[in-house]
Image (cartoon, rainbow, N blue to C red; front, side, top):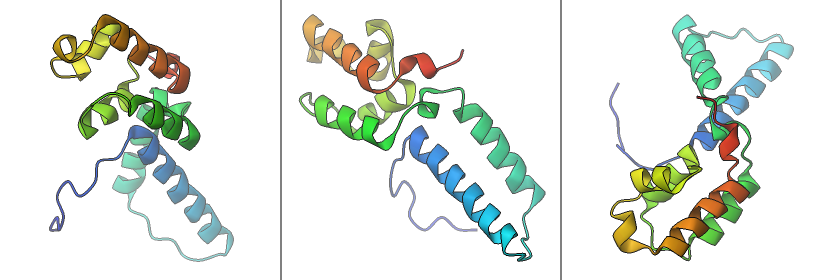
Length: 132
């Protein structure tokens, strides 16, 4: 197999989980139409393990509307795409966690801005959905 477009698009854990749910729905529809479905055992294992992992992250409680709202509100800050993606995937609940996700966070943003970012995460991204 050859990768045609490496890193063509970055996607969030929520989008991966949503895609897995779509795959499962399509498989159920196909099975209900009595079509022969050829699935590899390895693919099923990967899907189950990935879905199990993602259900223990904030992505399990996030919705597309949550992400739109968060991205709209966080756009007031000059963050890189990768930093926004990390904020969505990790949903940091503290400034310390925020520092680990945003490069030179203390130099780029004031205390109030960092606190506001953490508040935006708490409001939109459900950081309590994370099980550690």
